[in-house]
Length: 375
Image (cartoon, rainbow, N blue to C red; front, side, top):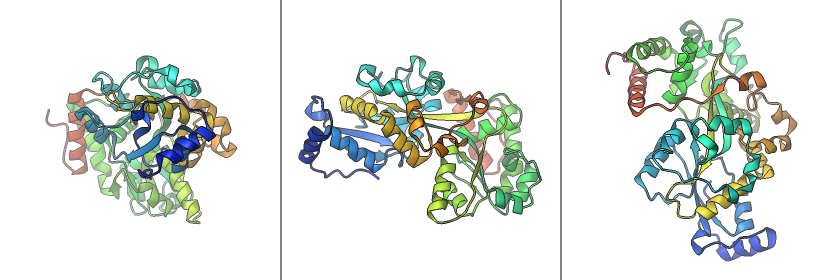
């Protein structure tokens, strides 16, 4: 969905003068280079921003937070605005000075940021100096209950058991189970299911995780972070460990295809891990003024609400929520109740050595090899 690079600036500037307020910008701030996920800023919203401001948007689609981190670490990326995952990425990148502090005087609409999500974000961004939440969600279990029942699942099955308990996963293998190809998401949930308070990188803990994953590995159809929600929408999978927002995407796809495919989203017992994708400006952004303008524009409640309606993720804008369709406001998969919110937690920021151990362990788990037996 990248916006065309060939729109005439004269037309945009004329529209800006007619449709909205303007500020004096340096010539170099007549464009803004955004690096984000594919659906985070739908084309109509980008066109609206261009018309109001005369600032041209160049949009690059992000492949992963790890690729983003590598790109920014090399310097001179050319990006002005990025939606970055709070933990571990933002948490480890702030000390490395990859981001510049935000000038909050230029972002008056920051007052609409959800205070609970801001407080969660402060765990990795003390004082909320570098980031403003845009979208957030949780990691849980997506399922098609009709297919799960038809596969002979036992009554009263806990969500996590559908993936992590070998006997239950075996019953569901034929209708299809998938998990994210992301140790950052899968391993903390597996540790939580095993009764561990947190994910640890010592040999004994890794060995326990390895044994638990080896027990369910034969019953997993896929280990992937892409496309699983499409398969759920088409009835090709019955269970997935995935993201809350993807449950909404799957529901939308099923409805658009005229399918009566029920997609449930359930929170795991215990800790519920949350991700927060936030606006941040790279330290060497060539157009920081334009980036601040875009953040302020996006944080208007009506603009944030339009995106939240389109994508199905929870908005980090508290004043956008009353503008949503009442059914979406009440959707527990998107906006969890107080009891679930009390269990929300960001994954901790791991050391470089821990990340190497987890990354190696995950590769070995997927390959069916033992883990925890080497440093």
